[in-house]
Image (cartoon, rainbow, N blue to C red):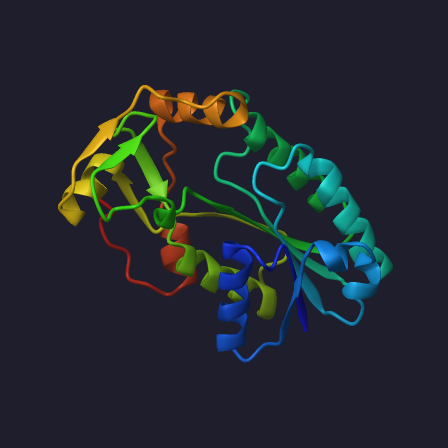
Length: 226
């Protein structure tokens, strides 16, 4: 039995589906179960830990989860982090960098996944506007690929102590839009706070992520990502 903390979100649902496709039982842990988390995860062999998107204090959230897993004697945890977690210009990423350190020092067998930006976050059904440079290079991750890797490292040996940066392909938003037959442009409208900081970073640097790790984990032939 595998607990998926944050199992009711899109990532959690995808991981549960991938686990079930491999014949593994999974339980989604959400806000209700969080009230007595150690009891909710009791009897589970491993846990996949996803913090809520843009959580204001992800390290505290992760620390609480790790304590509950240890109390319930769940000996294995896989933490859902982000590509390039130590990026001082992005506070959200820094929270994940601190959380990674907590995971590594928790006394559990651990694996960390660092996916790039989800392809599924882009609506390519029509003209696309994003608040950053459409020619910035990203390592985009397909959520289905990330879920397959998560299910693999949760159920197979040999991944304890590993940190995997994951991207399905390298591209720009302009290239993805052209493939879909739609236009892409940068809008000057930008939110404040953490999201604004993230988009400013994307505008300057993109978020490049290599594809070979994911290809190797899923047994795919290595092809030119460009």
